Image (cartoon, rainbow, N blue to C red):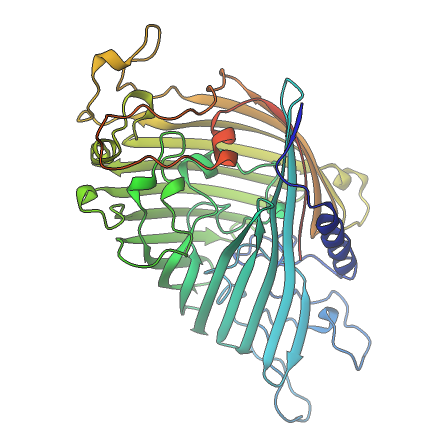
Length: 489
């Protein structure tokens, strides 16, 4: 039986056709907002310098952009023989909020520079019983406006999961120098690799790794403000204060995901701090970083006062010479998690954990490099391994009467077992901004049963919130064959 969650065929075809048409005019690959190598395929930043100067033309185009990475605003009046301004680091303003980079429609006027683009991805998962789950994951419009070299607005919003409107980011950035900038708005938290670089052209697998769904709740954005910058040409930093999570919406399968406000909640709530340090460029194409998060998860509920969340993460990635390599480890902590279980009345295997963690490593190689030809197409064969458990430890203060455990099941307060997966697949990129993927995920452990209504204590003051169906399906950890297309321009 085939199950369809969204059918937006006409919209997909139009957007893919438009993406291919726009990307067909590209003259080279774009740098990433946190650059790793000149040819990294992550669309949406400053365009690189062309290999050869174009012929003079009266119409502006992306191929005529000067080598300076930062956007240049034309002077109000012509001046004789202007020389290019010294180029600041290309990430001075895009480091803080850009999810991915791409070539897009650029309009330059006396009032500044405006870029318009789009991002989209569609997926289908087929399990061992030939059941199919279709998902139009995202179909977003992207807008960036820079009235001056040091001020920029960036926004991304559109259709999510085929049936709802979502704002992925809406940020104002001021960056007077590459070493220091400030931003505010709906911010993509600088945690892990994929939460920022989340365009489908930037990672190998059909779906985001489970570590980046069950442990780091990507795509994670919150209202906040912070500082960012680049020091010494090899170190990037960012520190933000953002709205905290709401522990009343946590779940056992993906503890933090339901607690996100996604930038839309107002009113009372806790605060959290999040930061990241990143080393890059030694060797060319290599990036290594670490992230940390700590903050309140009371959600303004007095009974959850004292509930806090911590998260630590480390990652490394390399892209160059045809290779695409990445590794990530993340550990999550929920302090005083038993208060959430008491508030929601959660018992046994439905109880919120105090710890969870995950690790993955992926490696791919572009086999078209073997032919020795000069082509912008890529055909990457990849493989990967992942080890994840969102309930690796439980609080000893949880209330768990022995009578709730049926024969043959785990003890009431036992953590969940770790689960492992292997991946193998192919990515074909006819253009840097367009990708088609095939991915086989093999679960090395039995999948979890389908989610059911949690076991609760009668009279509990709170009501558990059901997990998002798409995330609940991923949390089961089934084997599947996945197909996807994506674009980002």
